[in-house]
Length: 291
Image 1 (cartoon, helix red, strand yellow):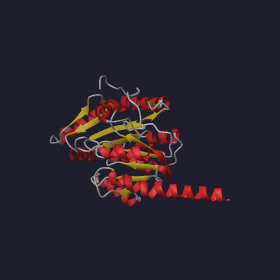
Image 2: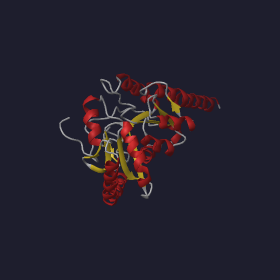
Image 3: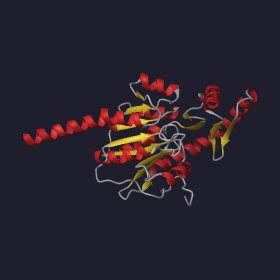
Image 4: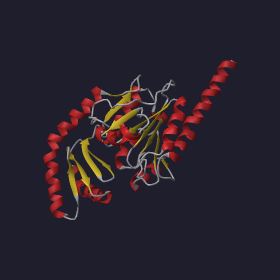
């Protein structure tokens, strides 16, 4: 990639295109769900499957806690095409236009940005004091603030982050309008009105896709916001998702894949949601012709 892609800009490249109108949406978390610790990070069979399903009106995207620059650093050099949409930093939405360019939804993105900048001004000193207290009480914990965001914490591993979140919870619970977003060894405090669910809702609204025609897959705590926001969707996680995510899905009728990665849960969704709808549509069409 020749130049850094900044949040709010249009990434270079194009989506796969296709003449069929959008009828179904697949929203995939990136790290730990679509992206695996392998080479290449995204299984080549995934791209083949997305091409095969486009005639059904299936469109797909990434819903991640990564910022757009961080995501594009890895995705752009390796991907054969852009996703049809992106949701980044658990709040910003980008949707493909008629030419296949990913355009930011400028108005809603600006609202989310301004709300979180106001929160940062209010909360950053409070969080710094709270974390300094924890560091003094628990010197064995290893963490740091993210370089570009004083409300984001990076721990040395997911277990350490979980411990930090547990210790910090009594403090954050007293801060009104604040959500804790967790994924792996990363945690971000943000305006509770904006999360993976609300960002995905912008995409679904832009393409007029109802909740029952969504597949939402993720492995971390920050994916729970999207699951809760769309109870009618097909919500799923890979086998190695966080235990609390697996437990939530089992308790709420979601799909816990027996496999790591996304292949099995994608095929299960297609068999349970897309194919039956195709059969019903074909049956209705035959009845209307015969009538």
